[in-house]
Length: 291
Image (cartoon, rainbow, N blue to C red; front, side, top):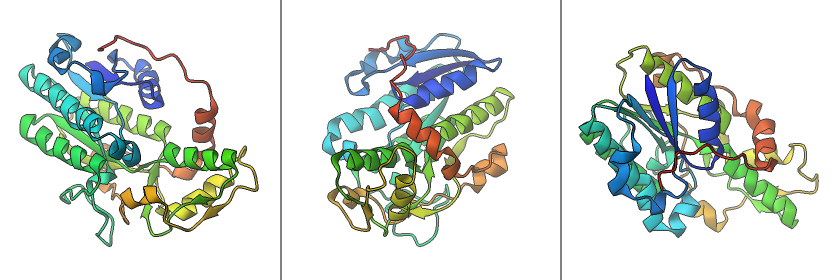
């Protein structure tokens, strides 16, 4: 199977490519360094003729960035994936697309299952939900994988607060499941390998690390990591950025376990490596440039 991996300079693309290169798959990387400026009219030319699966590894999980630039978010979270889906439909190619827990508004008391309808209230979730619906209409052979919170995002918040010497407000009212980038790459590779075996298991799935936690508790755990000064304080409060956070983003991940045999790994076991990854110099991304 020939797999085209669409990625940016973030670590997910690098880690996923490393995993796939150690398999019998034929893998082609496609670097989209700035999705907002990508020429969507040229999508057909990006995709090699013998491609069997397009994997869109552009992972959008920061509602703050999305809210600041709605136009770029629309293009990265909706227009680009839809253009890939249209190309896939026209050429009988399957598509693997990432989404997130932000498609939900957080009002449900229990965890969300894959069949729950999206009701987003921030810019990121809105366009991810619109993208999900468009893909279901355009392309029967698709995998949509919703993910939990980005663990890296909150490690960065604690690190920035520690550097500035300020207390960090993290709201205990918001609960969910973080996921580490290395764990997500593991899960994506496992799904792709089973698709290569001929599994006809198209549809929507969810994955996040094991153990529900609220953001205040998560901040306290991160503060205990090596390299974080002991004086760093996390307080249970609601900062401005938390207005974009649903109260509940917990994803039920039984469908991906029952279908692919993929079990949730504890996010705590990835904490130290995730933090170390953020302090390492960025690696040079492989590229077959799309823009």
